[in-house]
Image 1 (cartoon, rainbow, N blue to C red):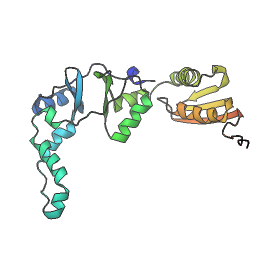
Image 2: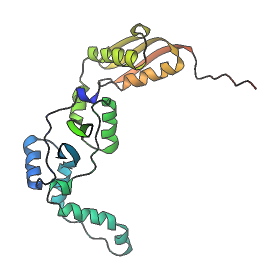
Image 3: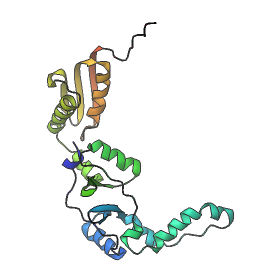
Image 4: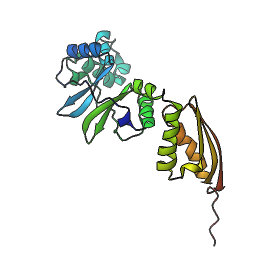
Length: 222
């Protein structure tokens, strides 16, 4: 499954000159946690609930002396955030984005590594959608039949160029079992990893053999 199959295309956005009061109103009425900041179709950054809460927190205590000088950069950033009046001044930039053609597993990895709840989807520099953690959770509820079909068609056939008859695939409550004898040891190692990345898969039990152990290399003569 790729991002374009999961993303929402009806994306609420704001301009960089949108006031933070209007941003807060949009977040509340739309019941969302963040908004892409867009100008002329190009995404500049993301403004979120955290930016509004930052304003409500108020100024932090000022560090004094040498310790204060060590924190000068952070203090300057704090002051800039507190002084922000518009989405453009408060937003986090550049935005962490993803292509609509990337796999859903990559979107999940980015969200976890970057600690974000949403990823604007960008194609050729233009915002085309948004994918959220809630979207990934919905994808996890896919049926066993859908999971089996994606592993067979997208992983076995299109990714590894194998015949669908080469592998027996069984899925029960998201648990995938793979059985068969593949051409190489490398294929037997990689196939379960790719199957695990399919949305909705809980775990993969692999019972795979191989005809050639391609990890063993013959010594070079001479």
